[in-house]
Image (cartoon, rainbow, N blue to C red):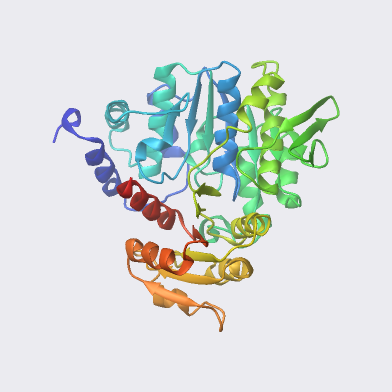
Length: 418
């Protein structure tokens, strides 16, 4: 099949067969192809966002702020929930199949015999689209880690690390110090390095200082003060009072917003942003699958302890009603920790099997449940959602969580119903 006749589905299927490993960290291969495509020195201002949790919402908020300020903005995020095109957006509009296929064709012609992973192909495609669209600002979400992630071929003008938790330990290390060092790899000398973790690993701080980055840590160099239905943000030279709360609820989202504002302030000389843009973007923040409320359904992709804590705190702050949890998880995620963290907020569980080599069967997940938990097991999401609705009755609510795959499957059922 010629490159010109391939559909987007054809390209994506083929990309997953091109490299012998689904994940291979390292920058040499993807940088070589980017150089051939003249993508390494973008005209656009670049904001890179890493961290264990909060990357997606922070990236989306940064893009919304710059768009509200009148800039043309490219946003690259991953993974997607329903459609691959979600990963690449310009001014909030997802890239078309044709645009992505054109990018893939150029990348294929440039790579020659260099093997690329699925994620590397997608990262290059996003950079290609942003270059061809001539965006003013590009916001790039790190896929995994930071130092060796494909996004890191671009030197960020400002980089944000939202949080550091224990996730992807097989790739990043088995403690926060090792993981912190990997995440600090997106920082650059003499450029803003924004940290939103309340107790950042020393390795992250040491690396930022060693390379001469402009290190800014929440509660040390900038702060956020919530009050009523708004909040104040301040650093030693600037203060914004009575900003509206982010459209996604929770204390973690306030910290994420504080970091994004710090990055925007650090780049004011190159891309001025006024308070009106902040006030427009903050309440407009929405992200499918992140504390995503649709009627009595709540969708949240929480797949590690830190994300589960954020979800549990959110549920605790809402009126108490009968709550049914629909949970599906991958076997390499901290299942017992997630269940323990959420259990106080969940009255009964509906467990669903996830497919694939990493998926966990519902019966296996049930073995992680507390002894007296009310548990039902289902093999498909359609069955799980029907069981959850029956258990919730007319007044209860349903929380779908545990994995991007879980939430994606549930949202796909919603789309079918619509």
